[in-house]
Image (tube, rainbow, N blue to C red; front, side, top):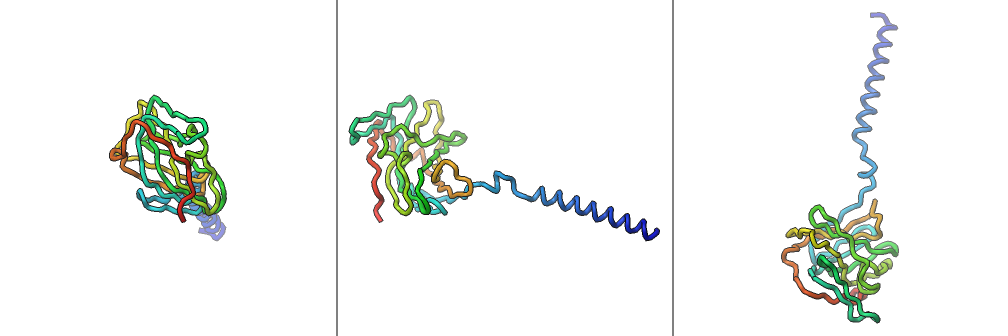
Length: 193
């Protein structure tokens, strides 16, 4: 084999090696979705979860046929053809003000926190301020035909776009939740220090 042929063969091998290496880098690089995924912080009921931008503790879950707000200037009745799942929690922003976004996962069904309860009674519609924790309830309006699994998960974030931010996730026993005909939504309050 001549020196020119050997150099050509080596150049071909190096080129093929670089192509294979580039393919490997592309295959191993995270997808955009994965690179921008939220950071889950999983805790139990009653346990405080704290992430980079939000802290939360879920205390109690109640299933109700109807919600009311007797303390409001104008009484509000939350009638629904389905049922309400209300979750008691303390939440706070750890870095900046914003809003709470809560989602309830019932198997393959995801239910967004309702904005129907009056402002001041639901954590979903209450503003979050950095360093100030509030205690209250988040209401989820579950469709009448939705099957209720024995366990469910609540996902609590600051704002609706949780990419690259923390998400507090709490799995709980839905089958053991208290069931009531009517639940009175109390006002949201500052959490005890």
